Length: 161
Image 1 (cartoon, rainbow, N blue to C red):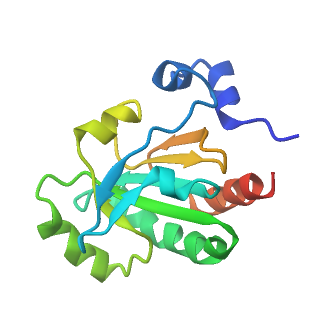
Image 2: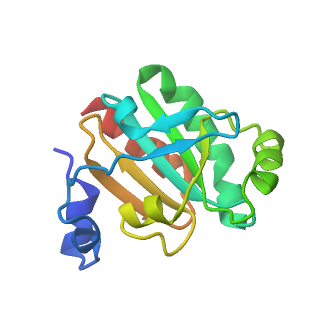
């Protein structure tokens, strides 16, 4: 039986429940736009496993983990995975759009704001990655660099549960 990571966090005394109220709290909806003007809303992704990756163009660990995110996205998207990159760049699309092209980011990237960061418990460090199950419940929060293999293992497990 898979023990949700958030239960492990609670046992270890981290602030997961303080941030979200409970281990399996409902992920807050957001409505943000891509550089092309397309609106991405979390509620439209219901029924999929959703990964929200808060990042910025100037953040070396953020840039380093993107190729792994792309690999996992390409592999699991046909099975119901969606990744949404939420940039927290203050300079907006001027800095983000060239990097999206340079890194060939194939998943949707939107521009975030304080409201969405605060809705997810406050983003105090980047990268921060939120994993949401098919029922819209937050099942994990990773602060810092996301190891590709561990990430893929967790996605596979969530998708098979």
